[in-house]
Amino acid sequence: MYRALVSKFATLYSKRVPATGVGLFRMLFGLVTLQEVCFLIYFNHLIFDPIPFLDVEFPMIVFALWLWAVVALCLAVGYRCQAASVANYLLWLIFVNFTPMQRDFDGGFDLFMIGGNFFLMFMPMDRAFAIDALLRKLRAPFAIYDRTRVEQVSALVYILPVSICLGLLYFDSAIHKMFAEHWRNGLGAWLPSSMPYYISAVDLAWLLNIESLQKFIGYTIIVFQFSFPFFYFLRRLRPLYFLIGVALHLGISLSFNIYPFGMGMLIFYVLVMPFSWYRRIGTWLRGKTKLTVFYDRQCPLCNRTVLTLAHFDVLRRVEFKPAQVHAIEYPALAELDEQQLLTDLYAVDSEGRVYAGVDTYAQILIAMAYPAPIGWLMNLPLLHGWLYRRYRAIADSRARLACDVSCVTETAPDVAFSWYERVFEPEHATPARSRIHKIAKVVVVLLFFQFNSSIHYGLLYRLHVDTRQTMLAGMLTDASNGILMLSHTFLGITPHALYLHDHFEGYDRILGITYLNADGEEFWLPFVNRQGRLLAPNWGRVHSMWANIAVTPNIDEVRLKKFIMKVTAFWGKKSGLDLENTQFIIKMKRTRAPSSWEKDLRNNNLSGDWEAIGSAAWSGKEIKISLPKDIDSL
Image (cartoon, rainbow, N blue to C red):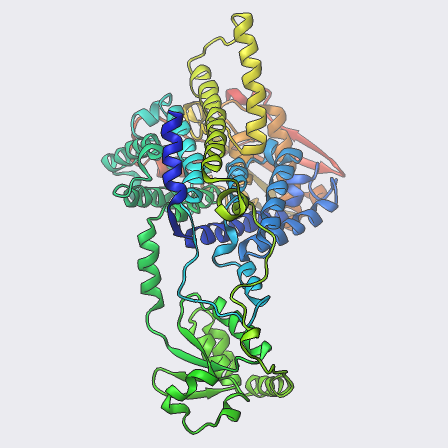
């Protein structure tokens, strides 16, 4: 087994593939993290304050969140990738393990992001779509760079994160699904899509009412998850697994209100997409050159400007050429002598029109497509005049070098090696055979960690096995728990028992909160609406707090009162209510969560009447909540 693993790794290690997918993965990982940090900033009083707005836990937490946002942005744009990835990993660890995020506001994907970030730190993040790649070039502005060359990396950096983070997660999740009756009935996607607390604003009732289709989707998910780690990397099957996986997680993002979970999983599919598809998509997007730009190759500022513009010209619509060498090849520039050519930045479009100075920059942005609106704005009369004056002030004072071949270096100066280079690149690491064995041993350890979790929770726990019936069994259980704690904390390895029978069985009522204004009129708090849906932006981890902790098949009165306190204080203040003069009403509505298919279950659960079962009133920093003595029996 180990030899087969080493042999496979040796093949993948030597296989060179485009770095495009890794660059996209880093960018999307940073953006998903950034949106989640922005979510935390918005809800910081609800999540981190003991009493939202009234008893602030630690004011510096908002500063830490803004710092995290900067780190996530640096990761997204590829600035100081190695440091940003390490800082991002540490921030995920700190906020998940030392704040109420994990205990009361589990986002459903926090540990998954920790595991993904662990692998990201060892990936060649700066090879594509990264500011770091541009900074390396700017250190040697006179070097000649081949824009047609695509950075190549080891195929292992694609395979390992997907196999561990996705493959083992899917397999573990499929094991748990086998113990849930509605999943065995093929209704694993149908049931949560019919529960008010879990659905988005997209009405999919028409789709849920096709029983055969819902069962096909449910069974497809199970087969997909069981088989993914064994077959997804096969060349012929990879497109199929890519399309099914993308459809699955797009469906989660659109139909459920746990979109961060769906998006967090979805970004891994840029590593699953067949390499040939990247080449074809790149060829299709780039098309023909729309503009040729001529620059002074003996001007340091011009060279750096061209390198910067070329870096952001991801569609390769602009071609940059030294005026001293190539201008003579273009009849449209025949009337300009060399002195004129070197005074301004000139460009010729596909129809032979000539542009100079500010107009050239505007045309470059328009030709690049995605920044075209900026180019159009630059052509507006008032702005164009101001930009022209600024351009002339810079262009007329720029320095030039009497440059010969000594100015041109073949490569940029050496920079600090990334972790990827130290582990994967031959010129920076130990001999290949030793590297492969070290990588294989790390993977074996990760497999052991995951199997420990899957066996512990997916089999022994589900089968109600007494793991402490003997002294030896008890010692093994304690060792397993210790390993689980470490792998859970630092690698994000955890049971993926989401939306199973132990979550939905008995989930036959939901709660909402209204309030009375000064005139006695009743309004719904902007949290749960009249249908029973959680309104945006109360999705993701706020949904988890209410639907998975406060209101469950077995309601814990203490936890319910705690979150009624938090929700009324937070949304009361957000809505501009005077808490002390506002009466909150706790309402309940009946729902159903059957394990067999029923037509119109979604619509039936969204309809129905609410009944008042309690109230809440604030007095200073104290809240009095009145609920039935045995709310769990209602």
